[in-house]
Each structure stands twice: as C-alpha cells, then as structure tokens.
Image (cartoon, rainbow, N blue to C red; front, side, top):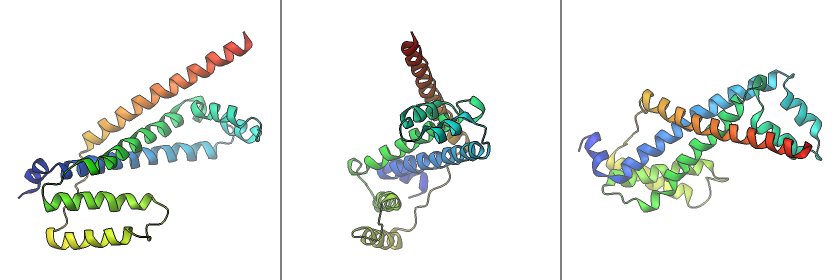
Length: 190
C-alpha cells in the first residue's frame, strides 16, 4: 500500500498527520514568541518589565493583567504570539485526546497511534517510569515489522494558513482583554 492510500484508508494515520502538523505549527509559534520575549528582556525600557519588577506580591495581579496585552514597544505583538502558541498547543492536545476514539485499521495505524503516545510522553515528568519504556519498546518492535511510517513536513502554505488562523484568533482575544481592562479602569474612575 503506498503512502497516500494508507492515509486515506486508516483514520489513525490521518490523526497522526493532523497531530504532527499541529505540533509543527505550535513549535513555530513558540519560536516567534520566544524571539519577541528576548526582545522584551533586552529592552529594559519596556513598561511591562518596569510594572512587573515594581509590582511585588501586592500588585502582581494587576501586573499580570498589564502583561496580558502590553508588550514590545507598546504593541500587543508578544501577547498575541503567546496566545497563538497556546491555541496551537491546545489544537495538538485535542488530537492526542482523540487517540482512544480513533480506530486503527492497519498495523501502520497502530504504529501511528503508538508514535503519538510515545511522543507525548516527552511532556510528562518521568518518561522512564512504567509503562513508557515498555510502550516505546512495543513501538520499536512494531516498526521493525511494519517499517517506519515517517511524517513529511507539512506544506508551507498549509502551515502559514494555520499560523494565520491562530494569530487572528489570538489577536481578537488580546484586543478583547485590552478593551475589558480599559472598561474596568473607566468604571473605577467614573
């Protein structure tokens, strides 16, 4: 069975491709967010850092609200990047949560499900505890029988569209937070 017909025939392979794509997008958004964060940390004149440093324990909630939308040079770019990353990671986690509900219809699909499970174990506290090494061992055995199904990098246009979708949703969220903060400040002074 060639690669494309296997994906059409096995829902587990389709799920793995979707999860892989979501993870790839999340990693790109993470890098964007980290670059913006680095710029913020280097530029010590940014009000967010001043507010956070001066906040101490008594005003940390207010500082967190400010940090939610005020960013590099007063633009919401960092907050949008951070929220876009959260949205992408959430999408990836939804795919992982769907593993038990998707039936593999081939050994390659079983391998795909095991790869997603073993890949997710990197995020847990101790991947060396039972059953993780055992599951990884089963995956290696299955791959020796079935072969490595490997994933191709998602197409650039698709990745860009996913990033734009998350970015747009995050920008709307950050704008709503900023508007809510402004309304709260008006209500407190008025």
